[in-house]
Image (spheres, helix red, strand yellow):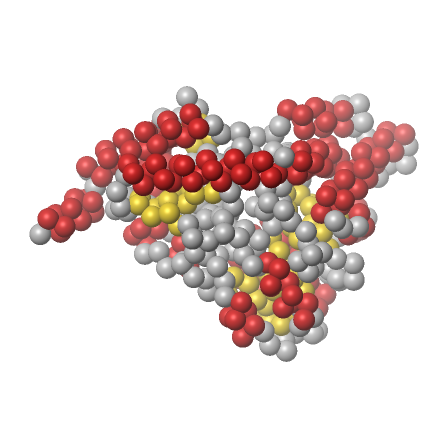
Length: 392
């Protein structure tokens, strides 16, 4: 049995979406910037896709720009704002649990002389609104807070953050890669100035993302060489990807309410059954408003890599954290920021469920996990020391 529980890393491209893309890889293969019938056919698909996505988000089509990924969009947003508004100030605010695409960009900007405030989070991964208010200075030009965390699923108080940013006339950038297509997102209602998302998180193709930039917000150029995407992101347009993204988002939104209910119930069942079966486990951010399919679980006194590999051997795909930093052996900066001890952070696994998963699959995972955790703890010095201390 092969079970995929790593949907926060990427989702499977839906067959319907692939079918919509194929004509733009074969029949309508022209360059959308070319001034002939082949280019016009491609441009028509690109423009229709922009209109579809814009309508779903409740924004104007001229405010939507296609990118190659979420990380690229975050970089374009953050670096572009800094370049355009640096004369107004050099202070930036973000959180301590952002995706590496945001976190490392701010680290680079610090080297360039910008001052960055990293807001702490509580044990559920939530920032404090009062901390945000206190962090704002006359020099603050950008607030960058993710919509939902990719590791633990915590959904931030985006509407409140947007109101504060608007009140202080500060640009608000939001990495919504894990949110769009999974939960309702409306950047206008939340006073978000720049929203970044990507298709492969909601059963669309990889290699295509998008960003909403509110009319009036200035973005300095960070890439040069062409006129595509308002000269913000020049390069040959990935029309097939755009078409696939638009169709996948349409599908995701049309069934969103049912998927939220189903995934939440499946996750809650999974966690409740594990709690009955396996001792010394912690469900991270369980008390927070979480993404419906995300379950971050710490298995005390074990190494996450051993659990991950054992599950993979049994045909179960999971993750130890962000796919963009999975090659690193350092403990998750998200978990450390939430106050989880380093030794326990190393034993954390992320299970990201999807509406395509079944209860039968989850039952198999529960049984398999119990066997794996029991076996690994039998040979774990940390676990054995813990049990000896309890006996004493």
